Image 1: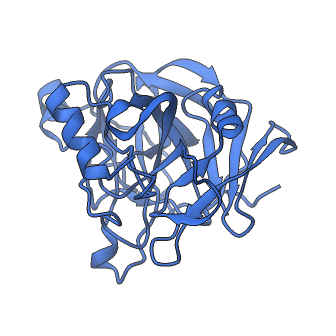
Image 2: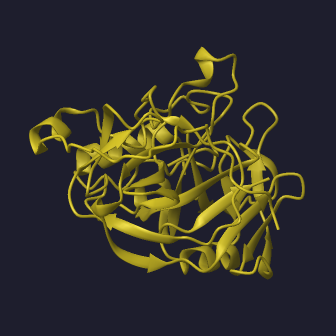
Image 3: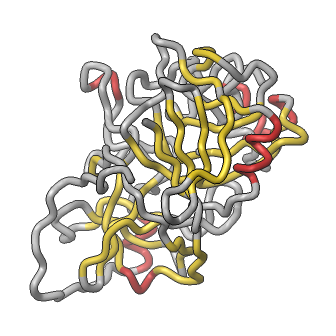
Length: 288
């Protein structure tokens, strides 16, 4: 794997969008019982007088993609012990900020790979669900190098279809340089040594995201072990490796997979990437 920007260029020219952030090797941050999740306060809704925007209006909203910066999103720093049910979308769907009044973006039914977008709800309130999103709400360079690594937004619950259970979850300890697969009860299933970010390009901590996509990327030498792309972003730098993928955090195989060696991503040995690859998309990943 070289650098993220080469990966993205390969994707666009090949038309397959398979190299969005694979460069976590020389550029670790390329291209997936703890306390309850902390989210921004949301107003209580006692009456649901929701009027859906038209399909045209939804499509005109900015798309919440992996490289988008959408200021109206909700900061989602925190940790969750939930093993959620994840969903797909029935159609492109409007996203809302905390007031749930004016749509700020849309989440596409198909992701950048052309696959169905996986959606991870973390809270429900009447006809609304708070979901984790793949976009940033602000860049580290605009907030003195300390931006939220994960965002969330509200959408209408009836847009969620085809539920899939994710009984296991992933926990990565930066201090211990270890990845643990936990079951629904929070008990360890397996443990693996991993490589993490350097002090100058750290892996974000005290945050939970999810595995949003996985793919092989021959341009980055990943022809056997799929890259696990998380919804998390670097909290310290806009583009730690000088790429153009929004500072995404990837979980991927690499021969050099111990120590502080990456630009933020998590490097795994073969047995670890095989275990993570067996988990469904939407599986939560908590970094502590």
